Image 1: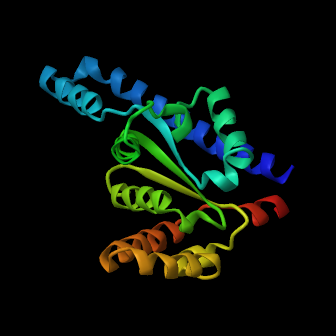
Image 2: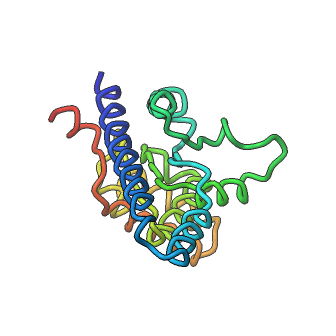
Length: 201
């Protein structure tokens, strides 16, 4: 029940944004009659060059949430007509995961990051996170979801996140690990959805 409430809240938020975007587009089209052709062409070129393929990119630890929370959220978004990227649905067979995910991130309007207890233990999750964090300044909205984790543990890399990073420091370059930590701090500081607080509220 709590999971469904949270999924419903996120879907409502995204639907409001979708309707808001449509109204902005309609308003821009309505101003064409009083605008110069060059200004209209400029607006059109900006719109077409954005190259959005997806409205939402989901980043999650598959072993923990793929068949429960993420599956509920993914299907709820699809039911509402929100085009959503989830790796096992969209990746082509034989395609390298890294470049495919990187491309999907840059061609999405919104990223929803589902922070679960084992999120930081996955190299792929951290690579996605870093790419998402570095794209936040390019009209890219990020919504963190704290799924059975405390937001401060994400921000400060405490608890299971601290343990995961200690393991990464043994295997990966220091600069690489610092990049992941920086991304986690930046995204962890964003206002997001805390499952426990949302359910209790």
